[in-house]
Amino acid sequence: MSTNVIILAAGKGTRMRSSLPKVLQPLAGRPLLGHVIETAKKLNADNIITIFGHGGELVQQAFAAENVQWVEQTEQLGTGHAVKVTLPVLPADGISLILSGDVPCITQDTLKKLLDASTSTGIGLVTLTVADATGYGRIVRENGKIQAIVEHKDASEEQRKIKEFNTGIYAVSNAKLHQWLPQLSNNNAQGEYYLTDIVAMAIADGLEVASVEPERAFEVEGVNDRIQLAALEREFQQYQAKQLMQQGVHLIDPSRFDLRGKLNAGSDVRIDINVIIEGECTFGNNVEIGAGCIIKNTDIAAGTKVQPYSVFENAVIGSDVQIGPFARLRPGAKLADEVHIGNFVEVKNTHIGTGSKANHFAYLGDAEIGAGSNIGAGTITCNYDGANKHKTIIGDNVFIGTNNSLVAPVRIGNGATTGAGSTITRDVADHSLAVERSKQFEKENYQRPQKIKK
Image 1 (cartoon, helix red, strand yellow):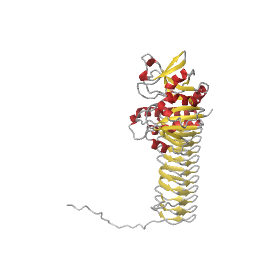
Image 2 (cartoon, one colour; image 1 turned 90 degrees about the vertical axis):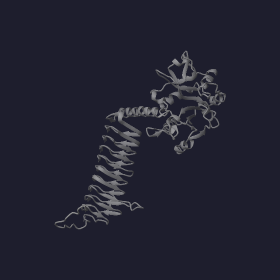
Image 3 (cartoon, helix red, strand yellow; image 1 turned 135 degrees about the vertical axis):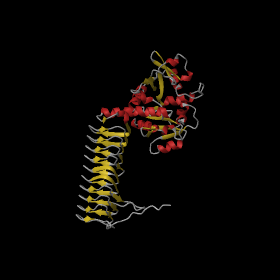
Image 4 (cartoon, helix red, strand yellow; image 1 turned 120 degrees about the horizontal axis):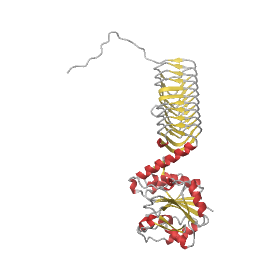
């Protein structure tokens, strides 16, 4: 049976007090709606239909690269009306999962269970049983079977004691959606078209309504304000941290760790507190990450040790490398095995060969550095002339003296040495010494200037 996914994403999110539409608010570094779309893609859905409304242009722009069919809800008349506007593009056969763009943590496993349970009945939903279901639509059962969903404002005192509630996640036969949605009425306390009314229609048609519960309660938590968003962020981060620890990652304190993307980790990886992982990263065996590091879209090979407060973005790091503290690797940084990058060293679009070192206060941009070379403290590659970038090439076993300025384009040959304090503007031959300094002079009995008294 073909599967469609319908995502409700038209809400404004007034309580967010933001110019950004609610479904674009970030959770773990990705928009809320992005999480839902990603889960829908994992289900191999034939079509992902997303209903937009407030801030629709921004929402569509944010997901322009996704294969999503957009449908506009011009008036906000309730969840039933939102799904109804998809009927012109919804196939007549198959089954549809109905999800909410502000319920980002629903998992593929839960949705598969829902589809399996609903295939034979034609309708099913995800429910959750809690101690206090105030504010939610209650699941009314008789002899264990669902008979109705009653919204909180329409529920009797007895019905409000029910602890099982509707999460708003459904699986429904497309044929039934085409049959039931045109029949919806807004004769209720809110004056809206409730999607929940299709449950009563299913019962009237003699259908049994299937239900499943998620393994984890936070899967069905929605986001309406900043407080809920922050709470869900921490729950989701705790869940991700637990998954990593089950895979063998040693998190010093999982409550002080953030994963805003995906981490592929080998064995015996150790991550200290307040580390943020963004994008897609890979850490090899025995990698150690110090406190306060921010690492984005970076691959780190086995045995590498990163000292605290280092920042990496789009870098590739070899094995047994020593980095930091306070090091910065910018896009295009590529470090071979056994490289040493020390405190306050910045590397950008530069390849550094095996065993080379830059241990203190250096900027290495748009450069190629061979194996076994040493870059002295205070060295910079002067790669930008105000209009264009130029390349510095440093060979193998080169010794660059302290406080050098290497004015690109320039080539330092294999085995060459440059003296401390030099500004190198011309190529240096292999195994040569290059020194560029003004002549030192002394003036005996020099008298310093004195302040003029007024």
